[in-house]
Image 1 (cartoon, rainbow, N blue to C red):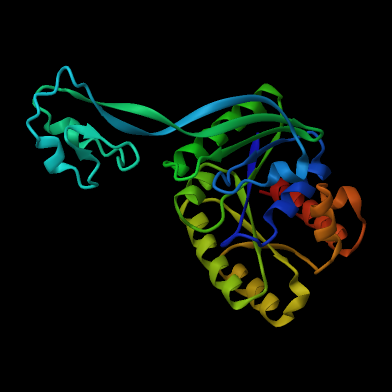
Image 2: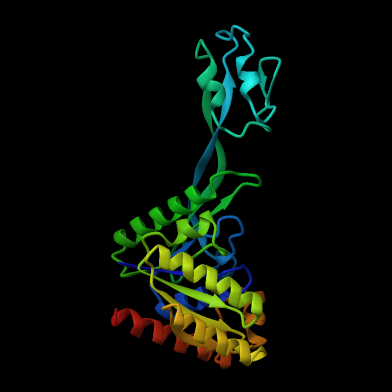
Length: 287
């Protein structure tokens, strides 16, 4: 089983459009949405949820009143002003557990908090594992890792040779959690100076994690000069240029209808993504 992660240096570059079409082209495949802060792959693939699992990403301190001797040590060490009158405000507690270390009678314990939900769903293209982090929830990286772990297990159970993961945008902890251990990544970039800057950073992160990177440029024809510069710099950084996707109003129409572009349209963008899929397969076969 090979896992290919679709990434970008920022949100809104077209990752979901690309992976949705890849799912349609691959037919039976296992999918994962690792963008747990703002998941949207399920909006495009209209899955049927089979199972929901709670996720606990952080603990909150709790004082046992029958054990507390009201020494006040916990309130003195709390850096978040979460303890007052020997009671803990769960809205302020950051789960650092320092209070548990200074309590002389072990009256303080850490209790798991439900900070998100993991969904195991079915689409007409294959299983989809996705999640949603609750507002203000902690441990995004841990949730991404758990989504990928379940997706990898699902791929093994279905004897699927391919897992496609919609990675988190940017270069932070969720992106590292999305990429670590993957066999390849496809970076989707926009032909703008900021798009070039963001692409450089995400290629550097993937290279540090020893994940080979292929690059495609979305809406390349809105700035052909920068598109060419992106291709040259990507190749100079050791990435494989896989293709270009032109601007096409059909992309927005497909998103509004909630269907993968290649399932709806055979216009220039759909043809470019189909070509991108073929080049990706050739690249992986030659690896």
